[in-house]
Image 1 (spheres, helix red, strand yellow):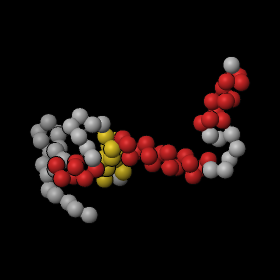
Image 2: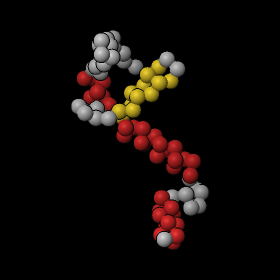
Image 3: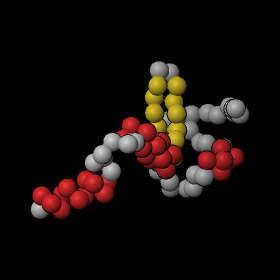
Length: 80
């Protein structure tokens, strides 16, 4: 784990070091998800959040018949 000291500006902004942005693949203008857990602030890329949600969904729905996106779409076609 690497840490650096940073300052919050008068307007409430915090700059992330270039080394940190590069390590997680953040580019200027990218969207991030900011989470507050207790007294900890986490900044995650949207891609990482989506990948985690997909992983959890796969684990929760593994082996359950009718739980895939293809099954859902087929059901909607039948209903239409």
